[in-house]
Length: 290
Image 1: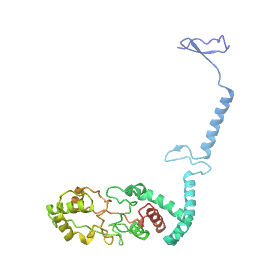
Image 2: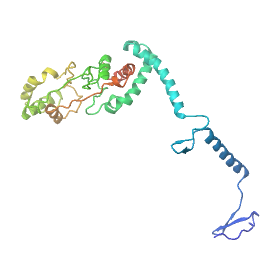
Image 3: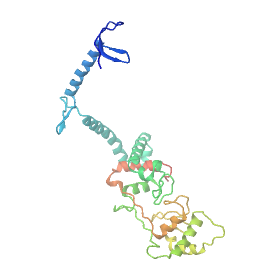
Image 4: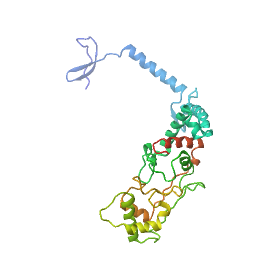
């Protein structure tokens, strides 16, 4: 509880009447400079509240007499950058890949735009740097279903794969197991042949001749006699160390039985031709381009 107000013997100032453990609180006024600064800040705050958007009320807020809007500033900056970007993109859109690559400054713009576009649209599936994920192709690996030239990549990005676009790339592996084209034992045999002969998991003394016969009768037309694949129909290489769904034998059995048919969107409904060309150049440069 407050005690009586008295004079401090040392400083000569009045006390506030509060005391804790024998320590008495002095009634010392705040420094004048601090008070003036505090009052000035209050005044400046009121001026700012008056000039700029500040206090919310009812369904809206005080917009300020200056009409300042950060949204308008951002929109203006975006519009300015878009106008600058449009000049380069129009040029990229009108030139061939060879002409773009021959212009170092323009190529740098295209690669920057392509990198940003890839990060915003492609990276969730294809991974950072085009490293890929299970079920999503590794673009940096160079194992292309439909070809890895600039024109091939541009076609795929533009129209997609099994996307519903009129010019989309389309391929369909038969459901050998689900539709009864092969018996379960035959699927196991052809899986043994593919896994050992093309995937490189050879087992000492294993006889895969039955699987080789089944492969010759059912798979060569698309995957080739030596598992080299066929880009015309989008049939993957089997004689590779890069496989879309992994290289486990069980994966081969599952794919032959009831194949998964991946879908890539057609980006022509979201990206303009110049941006598609830019992201094509970026993807091609990831390391797997041909």
